[in-house]
Image 1 (tube, rainbow over the protein chains, first blue to last red):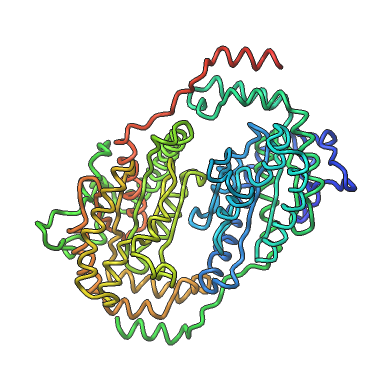
Image 2 (cartoon, rainbow over the protein chains, first blue to last red; image 1 turned 45 degrees about the vertical axis):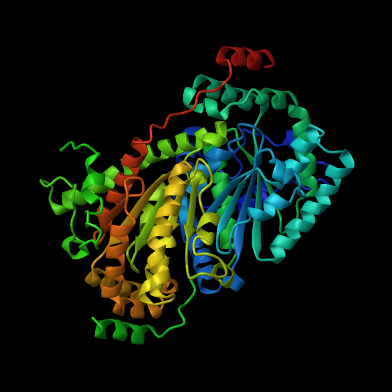
Length: 294
Length: 294
């Protein structure tokens, strides 16, 4: 039942599409790749929940190492940026609560991107993104991101096609720049089925404490489901790269989704070679000074 | 053993000093006001830890109401700002991890203030503070704050006395402005003893994973312990008010500290009259639309 953690990123990495669009229909939103096959559904859920708790502790330690590194040497400071994209009800908020909730809030910077403000619209689409990047030593999470500018913007024809089409290259150049500047990027598409979205929208309507999350416009977006899937399929193919990888996480099952995102993050941190910085002082001498002064 | 939660804020509110300085020496850093007296030390610790877990769930709910309110009506949006001050090793980081860790990281904005950068020094001392204020609907936590400009700045004589003395009024005016703009302020001084600081500094030196938190300059600050206590004593007296209250939390015992800060926050939220915003749509009609489109 032991499995190398390093497999999850490979299992969920967006499949190569040879320059075209990724075949999202071939990826089952109810799938559970990486979960030991011998477990019953019930056992798998318990197993995943327990693993998420364990992974949370590890993530918190890596996060502290990242943070500590920036305190000691701000110039060399690295950062991690998790980009979360999904259709409505895809589970972005829940993923953040469950996965980021295990980390130390002090080292986290979470930003949501809604419709651009008039001020933001007066600038290039990456302007507001640059202003929201995590500070050195921090883990940033984007709840939606610059990818909206090739998703909703495309589906709703908010700018002419040559403009949004040009953004694939702009985004790739921007992300290369981030990586060169010390960022580690992790991009996750939470992949739910159209049926699951309906169930979740119904649940929102049936729960008054969730009404603030519901917008009648969500149904208009739902009516364009296939257009959104096509837009995602092209984004995933055009903006994936070794240093800016996209992962497609089957997300109909919340316990699987949380485990998969936590595992992807854990593997990413594990590959960064983080460690606690050593102090540049003489420990024994400092101990003497402290005790001498009482 | 049931006690009204509303008592903790009264128990820990900074005592009135009649315009002078608060007598910090009269407040026992190992005290546990508000903990049921009939409990043994061991029972009290378990009781407090359990209460913190419960309070965490309540804090998360209030925080979501605050966040939801800002999503629905950005103009009316309120914010909560917790200011944490303490001497070195006072437990600011631990308090944030334990208390804020229970909330949803998506609604939190945590900022630490170190020595000002050259850019920050070219501006008024409140400039960097204003830029770090939480967005509408968010809970902000300041790990150190504008109060450093009447604490270390005073003790180390970084500006002339008339300048830092004038800042009490500037801070009070600034905080009145925040409250008028929809902020709810909670200011906490974590009160530890000089002996406890020594123990914690020794622990840092003895643990290589904590060396990044140690700075030989900490011992110079420790040597000015009485000067810092005097600076705090005057701050607590001069910058306390009904809408910008200071609480002195005995913090030698970490379990007490966490419980006290969580309780103060919970009482503060409870007094804000928060609730989930209702949707401005017809729930039954939306349900019909959703099901009709399948």
